[in-house]
Length: 425
Image (cartoon, rainbow, N blue to C red):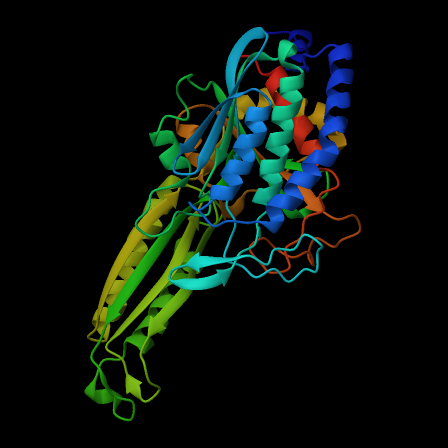
């Protein structure tokens, strides 16, 4: 059994005082560039699997650092290698690059006014989830670590990933495709770290959770087939709209009356419904789509079966037919407890122990979860909410008013660097 002193020495940050001072100097030196990179990327967002300009922008800066750079990984992903001056492990750092089909309402000097094709429509595009900050912080970390190359242990793999928000229909993308194309191999990654900005967490604060942290994300489609009739004579038809309304209510009773919520949360959301062409015609068919969020794999499978049973039986009771399909987009994001315990002191050293908080799990989802199948993984959140802002009033992610205070992005840069220096396999 290790003594408390030995345990403390193992968990303590491994940089010397001189190296720590140099790290602080290098991080301070890159801070303004990180903000500038972030604002450029914010003003020029691109949708999933279409991050062509973003990838070129990232690759150019990585090549200028003299790193080994590979482009076109997972369609538009960029991967760079830094071989340190000391022996050590292979540590991967990941940032996602894609934006969303959201109109930006905030009046910023670097506001996005770009548009793009999405599902056959021309839509506004915005970095409404903060992926621009992720890219900028990882570029900053690459710059600092390159400057301190002789002190870097082992190899650092910088992963700039496309399509975290989900690839377009009929396309592969995101973490699964990058993994499929070997991003966690050659050289094989020993541990991977990821960070996400959060608009409702005070700027500079880090939040994390050991074990299950973020939910799985399943996308479902329910197709309800009825029989068309005149709106004035519903008895001559089978109304799929009414059946769908009952199915939606049935789904919510799975959450409120069937799922063991003391074990883990469950969320079922219907976000899209399409049916009919005219107000006085009961349509023949209705299609609804939505998402399922769970934080336990057994509950995930149970909810899937309950949804199929609920939809088909409710439809059957009305003489309709319901077909349910469910596609798992992401797994539960799971932070390896041993890795969290080992590396938490490094995050505390980077931003101060008082600025690191253990949080509850979240029903948001991340395809970072797939990297955890290949190596121990640790994913955490960095606050981007302006000082004095009420967290309950701060605009949420994926909304037009989403806003990030970018004055402390250097905290994210330092965290990434500290993790690299301190990690020992």
